Image 1 (tube, rainbow, N blue to C red):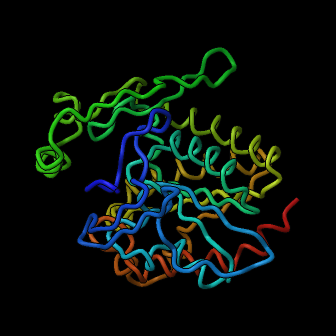
Image 2 (cartoon, one colour; image 1 turned 90 degrees about the vertical axis):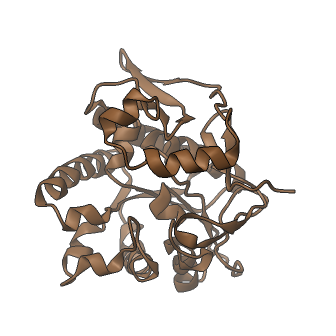
Length: 297
């Protein structure tokens, strides 16, 4: 029987969706997690083209929307192929890559879509985010070395107490969050970009090993449409990762131009994530561009 929380501790990844969970999540949306820890994308269509695995943070997982409103679920309906939603709320780019490696081995997809936002790079500079300890990487010499595993379990407070504290601490300024141990940093600010570039090399190695094409997708939070300075900085970071991925032989897609073409990009968001309409835009963009992306050598 699944527990009452939709995320549980994991020794490698820090936290993962709770297999068998069914219940409400962030924003009052309903969440269904299957027995493999994958969010439900609807009935899987039969297809000779093989499954598509999607991995990312809360923008992939689909915070604030119903199961069928996440972009992986909507992509499944558009392309007529099974799409596995391996996104996890709160993940850094390091956890995203580790989960991609793990799920690719388990599900053997023919195509993998790895989505990220710029803040996922900052999260690679931490060994704890939102009171959850996590794995992290260090660059030692010319090698990317995994640290912090097995990840310790810090679930020492009752679930309801943690939820109430989270609802307060999540809005604290970063300095205060660090002071109370809500986040714990192991790298200086900005180091995550270099780590992220090295992580694209791991994705390229996975692509070669699994013979499954990988597409790296940049997504954006709503704040970029309200603050030009933040938008420019986030685009600089995401473009660096996309350039690194392309140099490694991975296909890439930047969703910014498509949203920027809309007169009111904010209309595609809920509180802090994309709404059902925004996720449909992402799914439609992927459906339209995947054929040309996958023709790249």
